Length: 395
Image (cartoon, one colour):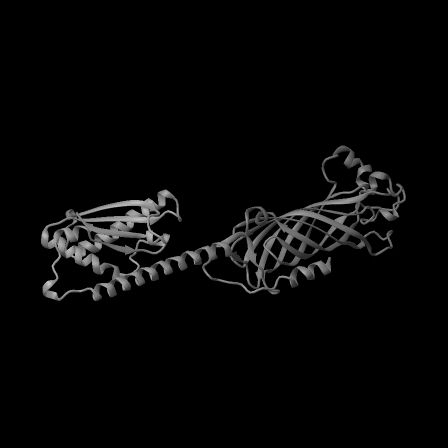
């Protein structure tokens, strides 16, 4: 178990990240060796359910109630290797009373029940059930299941008739620990557990009036409460969702490519326009030419901010003509149908159209002279990122 404890703490060595990435619910970046240690100190109350008590007069009258109870203290030191798995070393000390031999007419014990001092220690692997089933996140209440093995030691008895000063027994423990976080560093513990040891731990080895009950074990049921301190770095960073990150990067790359293609197309159009430009005195655009002219404004994926202000150059020319000639401007928004659902694409196309409408109003066109509509997701332009646009034309 000690080797297992070392293994849990040494495999948990990796760099953490604080980047604002999409994360996975059930995966975390493992911690360093000195992170997520804890020390717990508490008081405990034990109830004895020993095999010896089954023969006492008290137990015959109270079969479902322990005949002996005692108080003690406990100290635990441990570490969480992951949000789910951890290990702790626990030491528990207290005192107890031996079985009431007077009820068995034991001539070797006089004056009531002698007492003895007991120490339990062991290693206990732990499983955080809350993080296992609900995924890791900082929370107030955690439910932890644990079990372990160790030793129970009887340090001595007050009855002079029992000359064996110490006696030890193997120990098995299982329990449920509840932790309640007060701050990042402090937490309260409420622990319900059971111990099982040898039947002779509390002094029945020298019993004269009743024979030893072979094959039986002493049981102790306990409850403890205490305060704990977290040491080192507390908590874990959630592991990044690489699939989501790569998909987001690809979408951003597609948007950049679409913007670049739009700039290249604009550059080619400007070159062609310059090559075929007539002298200024001969440049005359008729109303029919403007009616057949439209301008496009492009947008990035899932955005309704204009990607490049250069797209507004042609829009400015149309807006100026509309003001000079009393014409209406038609603004139509689109989204690409290959990304997003129909409802979101409709909203996105309307928001893009509203953005261009506001830009045209800033150019001096009255709001009542602008007709706006959103067409949702479409696939009418190739490549498909070019569908993330708004067209502007005259009516």
